[in-house]
Image (cartoon, rainbow, N blue to C red; front, side, top):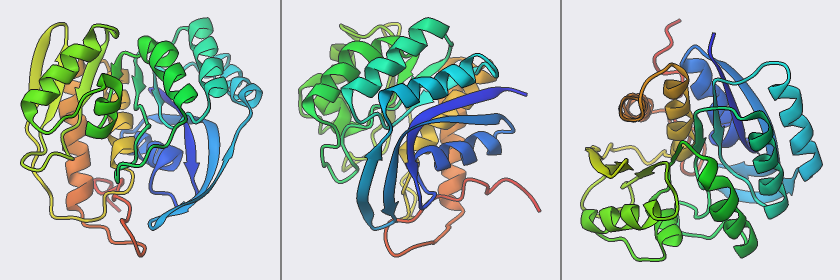
Length: 261
């Protein structure tokens, strides 16, 4: 059985964070492990509290995982402090796992900044360079590339700009553009577009977490970057089309839509 580790925050309502990651990994018939960077008090209507883990405890979790059940891939989501980022980087450099997917959770879907400047600096300078692939949304790509993105052409410019300091694959998610939902992969100097259909479902809580975890699963299975993204998009499309409707706000996906009773 393939093993996938998620390093991220906990969502007590189960729609995003490590809960979404574990459901996604399990739906891919893989063994899920987690190192929790923060506890959050949140639901479909918003985030109401955050309690960070200490860097030392994050490191202890990673030691326990890496020395016993070594992962075939690693997905990294919410990392809220520079000290936690530095500890994760230290452990990744020590144990050298492959297939590292970094979802740079910097800007919320609504456009709110989630990380301090010092944490963003550590994310950009220390963690992102270790990634096999990063999966920023439009807002995050704007912050990373220090430019505005309103068109598909802007996405290409931003990807090339990011590639000057980061040598791994870059997947810019286009869901926040007005006229398209296409995603752009830039890898080894080559652009690949993944057409995205807009699905009529307001319940999109945890889509970024889910997509990056699905990519990590496909990489663990030995697929290349392009195939991993294509399969992950197919999975998340099915999870959205299943039409789960829970909670009073933007609800979660049905991660287990393909699992039969």
